[in-house]
Length: 241
Image (cartoon, rainbow, N blue to C red; front, side, top):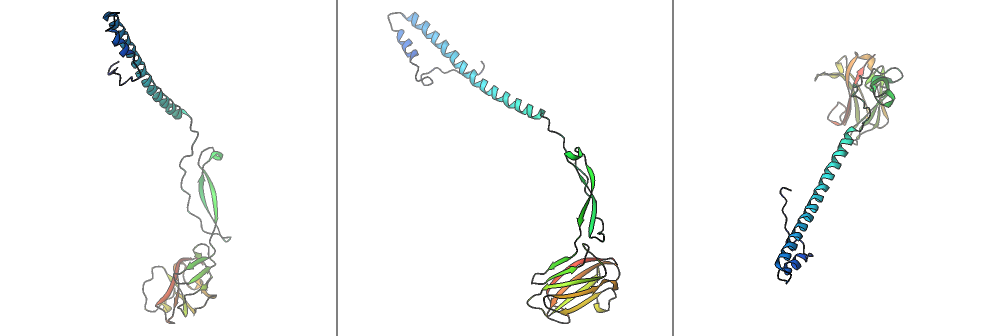
């Protein structure tokens, strides 16, 4: 075999003493010719022994490679089973109805749908109140709502107030309204001011303003005329009367 290097020294076979005994025969009375022939036979025996050992090791490698190849081949051939495709994203939610329910078209895929995308109507409950919490203790609840949509009179319940605050301001302003000189004179602005105490309620009549998107801010202050605010919470509302 190409590249096979054989070393028959006693360092490789430390327990083999045959070669030493055969070498001693050369000086024996039997004659140097017999000793030489036995030495050649021994060398041939060692050659084939080394060859068999080398081939056996190579066969181990070949067997290991073949085993791995067969496993990979079988794994690739095993049928993975049907898979669901990538279904479409769900549609946008509808407006909340009077029962505070909203719907949308969504898609599902499973063994029940035979691994095909199937549309269905998904329903969810709309939020009937909005909870707002400030950084310094102001805690209010806005109701009734249908998610962000409100109509008629809405209630702002003050559950807790900051330790520093004597007045609560509730201000409803149109989205995009800039700084004005006197917000009390603006036709589409609602402002209510009450004493700052827990369990206080503020009522805002949205019928007095046009429909649209508004910003609702609830502020606590020690100044009856407004500002600086000790705590502020705010949210966006859609008025639809």
